[in-house]
Length: 41
Image 1 (tube, helix red, strand yellow):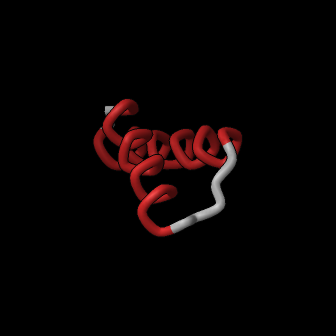
Image 2 (cartoon, rainbow, N blue to C red):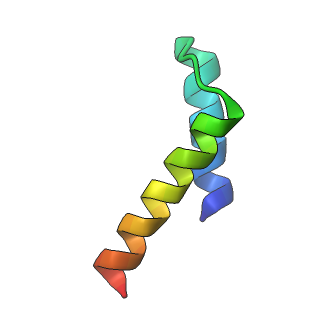
């Protein structure tokens, strides 16, 4: 799941010129996975 989300964020970055650093992407992944764990655990 992490790979798919990361791929999507990189596509978003390239397609729309969103300024995301690798640290930003890692943090977004952390937050998304925490939400998923909370909702579906």
